[in-house]
Length: 130
Image (cartoon, rainbow, N blue to C red):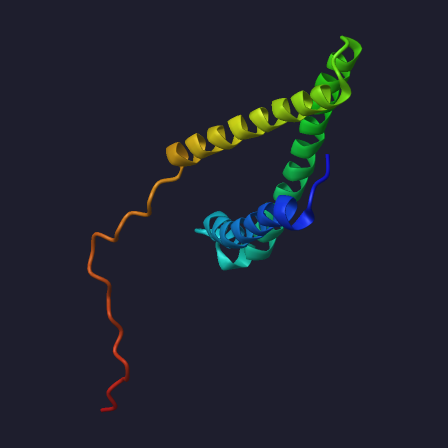
């Protein structure tokens, strides 16, 4: 079994890069919405740290689940590639389930900002000298 980088990996890498490039600025804007300017640095650092730690922790858990499943199948007599594929399959299913759960939480928790009910007060562009 041989794989080609251009046909097998490059399309997925391009999609991941484009998706991350489009999603992360929007996610940062959502996370920073409503934060006072005096706390912007703290909030930005907290959001970035949470994203990094969450990704590392998620990857560690999914890799552990995948390895456990693969090892269990190997010890049960399944062929190596079949056991490895099944372990990855389980991790991808769990990851997809977590994405669906995150979308449901976002749809439930995030609400559009309410429009102002009063007319905005306009300041004069210049002051009259008397």
